[in-house]
Length: 256
Image (cartoon, rainbow, N blue to C red):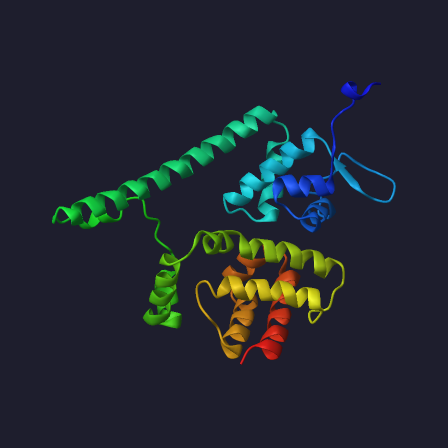
């Protein structure tokens, strides 16, 4: 077979560079059965072909839509019987719907700007077209107070593009790495684990800056509150407990 007839393949490092997904995360996706490589060379190096790259694209699209790894796996399993183009067509529809929602937000903001510049007054309904309400805001105000919630809102408005990207992907990336480290048997005070918790802490500080006591309290909340435990662990309670213990070790060592 000549070179032009060979199936094109990419090493794990090449896929990592092209997709922005770390090699560690790709190895984790392999370990949990989410993304099998096309083949593995001597020495264990993974290689991927077009079929695997298409699957990775689907994983990343679903992750952008806010799904956890377990939900992504279920979605992919449900889609496996469909053709690649049909699946991508559905993803395209989801992305277009999200674009339409963002376009509505832009239109609302622009309309507000125009009205204010002209000295007019908008109706309450028109000022909030396209905005999704946070179902936990009322509880957050009750638990932590109006000042804390308003401070978090003010911080969000002042984010840079880099901070907005960290806010979107920082928590998920930290959990993916933490899941791998736990599977490798790393203790919670391992330097690698603590580096991941530091990423979590920096992500959290985009919204709120906790001290030692409040960070330890949040660690307990992740485990004790059913909603947090499910959201954080996606059904893996042991991982949430691992995060809790790692957060407490971080708080005791680095926070005051």
